Image 1 (spheres, rainbow, N blue to C red):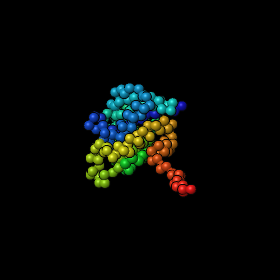
Image 2 (cartoon, helix red, strand yellow):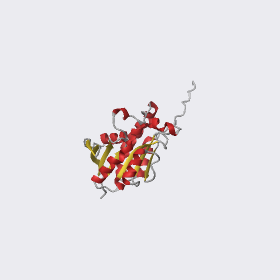
Image 3 (cartoon, rainbow, N blue to C red):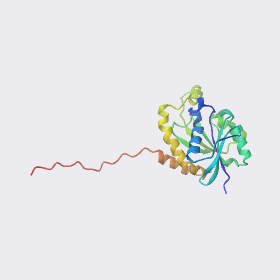
Image 4 (cartoon, helix red, strand yellow):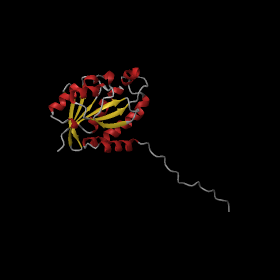
Length: 209
């Protein structure tokens, strides 16, 4: 039987950060919590924890309240308390090295300058699953902090809302460790509708008899 899944969404606590690009992880975890009828949020492990099920697998949702740079404190405490293997951890985070609106699943590897991942890797090692939500790169390294700490723009909401809805609908596949299936389903749900084929021939005018 699979160990429970710990799904940790990364972000910064406080209403002033709630709509920041850096809070993409919180945004998705909140949406999964609401749609899949998880239990109430409880203050635990220096974060907020909720319990529920996805695809019949016991799943914990976690939102660390330690600020992004110390995410490993909260995530590490939860993983150790529940005695979960590292492969049972899925971290959801914003990713500047992916174009806005793109997502990618990855297991292990570096942190690419993402301070939440850096903190988690320092606490637990790198071999955990990641769901990377692309927020785009501002073009210069000096602009990155300002970019991720700005709210999603009105233009961003145009892709963010359908993407979040698709990821929420596909979340049970994450609990099945079917990362490829998750990616395929999200792609299917977010592809633009095909234009309708116009098969009708123009009506011919009847000639007067």
